[in-house]
Length: 180
Image (cartoon, rainbow, N blue to C red; front, side, top):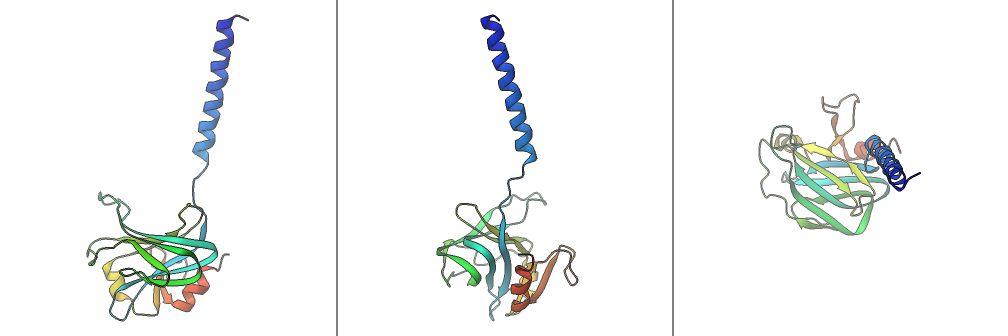
């Protein structure tokens, strides 16, 4: 075997290895496993309150962003919160002020836009865990009362066409960890 044939054979092996890696990478999803569920409720004054039920592991951050970009608008982060001590179990916090162990890292808008969809979810700084996101608009917030939580429940009786359900805090807590 000549030197040129040896180099060409190594190139072919490298190309085959790269092609195999590309196929493997394209068939493997990069998703963050879920540790619980996110909901939204309101105070007596109608101000939004984040709600998490962490079923296992922990959550130490939350992000609020706009829409999914389907209507041509770019999705953008508009609020974020973090915790010095990771959250476990059931936790709530006012989105405007934080509290209950949550610090505001990026202040959400004082007034949410009427025609915008907002999405809130919890996660970890190292992206090891997340919570199911909740999507809401100002109309959804206006329909809520304290003690009632909007959250993603999937294809269940009572859920809207997008799989969202509004239920009591107790029902949210029970539903959030039902599959765990």
